[in-house]
Amino acid sequence: MYIGKLAKKANKLATHSGRKTLTADDIEISF
Image (tube, rainbow, N blue to C red; front, top):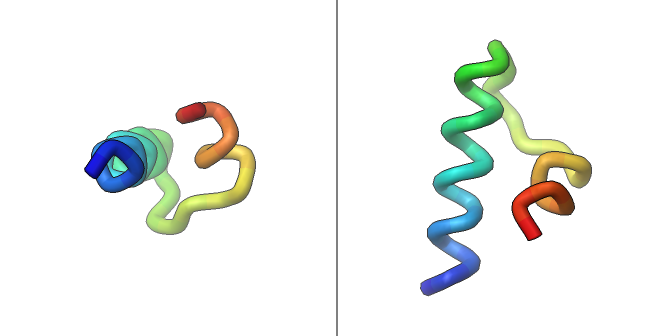
């Protein structure tokens, strides 16, 4: 699913920036 891919990508970005959790801002950036 497209949303699932975005979630994985956002999760990876969050991990690289030193955070373990997603925020609304991360999700909005993905869109």
